[in-house]
Length: 153
Image (cartoon, rainbow, N blue to C red; front, side, top):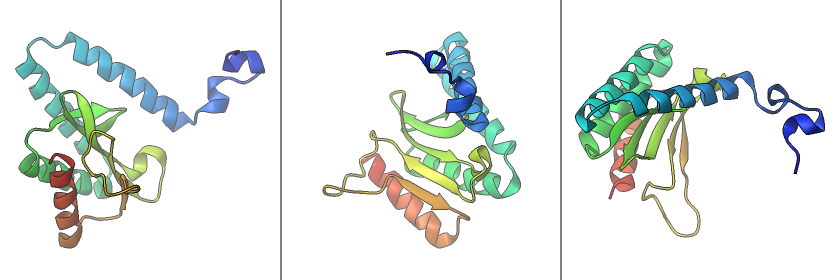
């Protein structure tokens, strides 16, 4: 099987600029993780990286990301904050359980709270793993809290 360039296409034809930027961020995150020393240093620096990423978001995304960060920290303290493809994420034993994708990241009309297959959200033969967010109201906060708790149960 040939590569993309063998078929007359390039990475710029396959991936959007936003997708290429996310992949580059992921490579930089991995390099940064590899340079950290102790487990405690890694955890503290990873959380600082997440908080810095959140602080750099446009206001509407930042407000939601701050609330989600607080909800995860309060309801699933076993999850470790980390950046994942340039997005705030929360991992158990290094595997991402949930993440926040800012609307601005891929120029979408809504942000996304996503859960990976490490999350314990199974509910029969079909269940949701992503949720569109336009704001975090009290009702939405309750739903997120329940999802996060279930994800780590």
